[in-house]
Amino acid sequence: MTERDPSTHVVVGDDTDRGRYEAHIGDHLAGVLSYVDDADGNRVLQHTVVGDAFGGHGVGSELAKFAMRQATDAGHRIVPQCTFVQSWLQKHPEHQALVAHAYEG
Image (cartoon, rainbow, N blue to C red; front, side, top):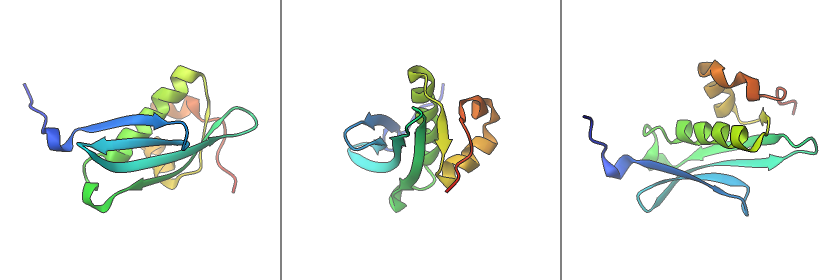
């Protein structure tokens, strides 16, 4: 059995008022992935920011995974504007079916 260090456990939630997914480690905001819904009902994943102190803890990946689960559960398609999410999707092709179209910006 592997024990998880509680100081690095990433918990992700959706702050719908701010249009962003938030990742917390302990009491600290570790990172965010901002989004907007476009006119077609697609969720545009705009930008991922991870605090310097939290790099290397998988925060960005947890945010991306959460965004994919949210899209699946809500029946949304995604538009990956964020370069981190674009790169993450290349490593996780099982989520490609959620992509509505490439970002054109």
